[in-house]
Length: 130
Image (cartoon, rainbow, N blue to C red; front, top):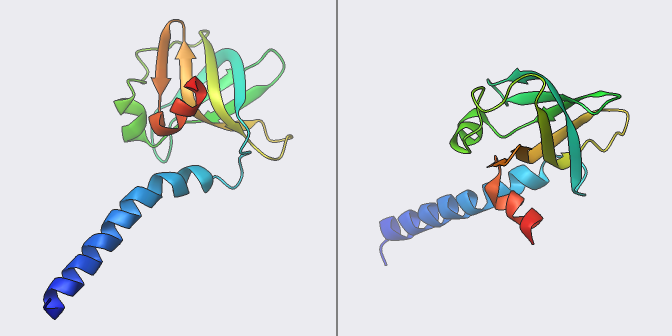
């Protein structure tokens, strides 16, 4: 095998490995979030669709929670945008809450609004269905 072919194969292997590892690294790299699943139900009080991550603010009756979603393109690809929800709607978020329990923040992998489900991280939301 020529030197060029070996380098090409090595580079291709590195790219493929990185592509496979990135979703897992992104999920498990949420060092501020618990590994345990967490469910939050609340009333939508604010919505932001923008960089670096869309967020929703949910009030659980006592506290306002910041719920971080996937990056914009992934969130939109899941079908979630400002047309599917309104201030005052009840939203259920499934994901991982902050390790610091005084930080009312979570990273959502799934949102449920009425009968609609939005899996912003479908590869991780599948764990909820098992």
